Amino acid sequence: MLSVLICEDDPKQRERLEKIVADYIMIEALDMELTLSADNPIEVLTYLEEHPKTTGLYFLDVDLKHEMSGIALASEIRERDDSGKIVFVTTHGELSYLTFIYKVEAMDYIVKDQPEEIERRVRECIQVAQKRHLNEGGPQQKRFKVKVGEKTRSIDHRDIMFFESSPVPHKIVLHMDNSQLEFYGSIKELEEVGESFYRCHKSFVVNRDNIKSIDRAKREIEMVNEEVCLVSIRALKAFR
Image (cartoon, rainbow, N blue to C red; front, side, top):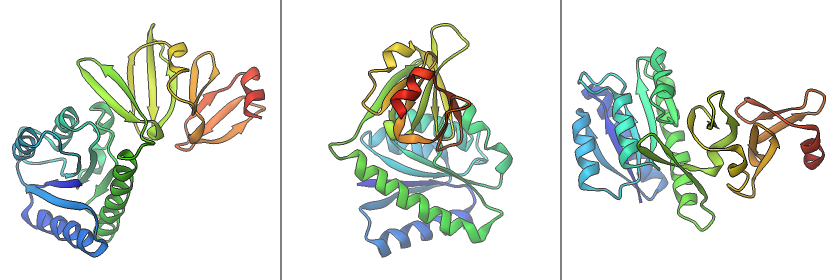
């Protein structure tokens, strides 16, 4: 079962989120439960310490009026629940770039000044989280595990766009839908990640499942997130 946890310091906003989530779970009869709604990030971390096997969908405010911001909380959540789905619901749309700095891989960033959009977007996030959770529990689940600093990250193959050699020697940049992370490794090793991954250039290993289009004249591959990687003449033949 997927757990839903909310951390929002505004009582009215928190109550609204609780109602949207609870009503949608009930109406759709989803295998999910609203397990915690809090105004303090420490409550969320305490819950995860007490329930270490939690796989959650987290709705977090960015500015929690606490020494720990929502984005810092998300980073701590990643330490405890590396498969969790994180959604920010905030008035601070301009701070979305911090999700890249903290490498929290947010599912969505919903801005509160668009009230007509909040309920629709929250419901969509619940749908996507439930679908991914069910898929991850099946026999076809494939994940790429990598150590980044002192942390070990576990990333669904479907979320990976491509791997790229970093300008920093002996390091690789992993490109996902809306974030990146860098780790020590070699491009050659990544050819063996899975059957969907193909070394299309001396500096790139691409996930063929996430290719949007191939420009043969420019020798470029555009991914579904609109990022571009290079492809060699030899690899073009393989894609044909």
